[in-house]
Length: 512
Ligand SMILES: Nc1ncnc2c1ncn2[C@@H]1O[C@H](COP(=O)(O)OP(=O)(O)OP(=O)(O)O)[C@@H](O)[C@H]1O
Image (tube, rainbow, N blue to C red; front, side, top):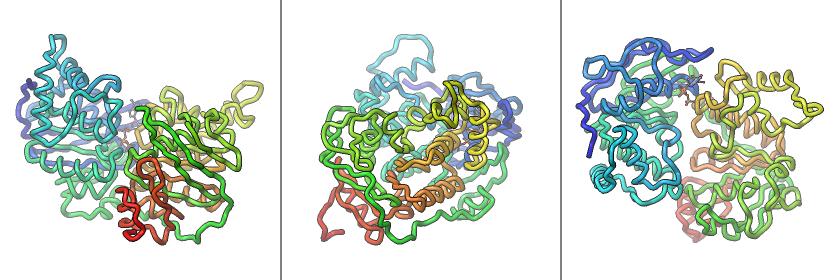
């Protein structure tokens, strides 16, 4: 049961141009990719990478230009036309229905692609098993999507795309939400698949661009500014070509902090969505002016900890002392008022209201403050000024401050959240994967901002799976494993090896 698609020996786009109100998102783009080739599409946030891929998939129509497959012009009016031609895309935001099973989601993909007909679920199940065996992509057809980790959901998206007969894969930041181990596995898998399929992938991680691609195309302001062979360029070369300058991520090399304890978590017990204890008697304290990195493999309680501190998850037992007052089970608004800043993992659902304008999102937590409202009327000029200033400072690429936040590129949405949380003058900050989806230049800027906050005396809990990020910024590193803090290491004792051992659950002091 496979959509019969023709072999794709070449795909070429010629002079593609796409305008959105106030933005030239694709500016006369031409590029080509041959059978079995892997092309990496890189560029700053908002450079137009996703837009070009959405045009290829029939989600957007270009204003000018054409697409040629095997030398013949094709016109895609919808993603179904692109599927039928053998193209498949895994988006940044997975398009899966959470309360349906893997089998039902993939069957839905068939139904959307094939239109109304009676679906044979047994055949879909067989096809899933066939694809997962062929490519070594293990999925459980009966698991519900909400039960799966981000990495598992991504595997389902890949299986779905392959079940539908894709011969040309487009992957939009496929590793941005994966654990380092899942990333390594995906890169190996994609390498293996590239002997049979052509792949275009978008990434901000230059090492994986280097590891996986044959060819690199760099976009800037919607136009191709560089095209070349990957083997001829080092990651730092590519970074310089992309940003126009050498990128150097800053390091925290200041002496350990002596501030007072501001966040003191005692014997915290919190349940996961599935009803199991995700945090078990967790203890952790953080001082003013210190960055504590929380290292761990995703799914060991990081999400539950961040949500419990921010009042978004019930605390079963224990205390969250913030400047001496217990925040456990207080409302999110109470916690915000107490001075807690939060950069959440889920930027589209927890970080912004996509249908609100960018400027409204920038005052989301402060709309009733006297700075932005008087007698329940909003001060429009102040709100505009705030947005204009933050847009410049954080280099948020948007035509103006009134566009809906949902229409911004993924990286620019992240910048809106960071701009809001860092400018609110929090007393404490919880930053969960703060540079996920950011281009290198933006990551450099955000790391500098976090160090600046530290110098101002703000305590920061930095949740990340990127050990480089943790090691660059932290004063101390706490390793979380199965809902407990395995150990807290001073910066001088923390390295990839010591953290890796603790993250795997080994607690023995001898090994660290
Ligand atoms: N549906 C839309 N409506 C209006 N503007 C849009 C829309 N989609 C994209 N844009 C704009 O087009 C430009 C390019 O966005 P795109 O998402 O293609 O960037 P990107 O290179 O993928 O960025 P990132 O690395 O941040 O994901 C941005 O200025 C964005 O705001």
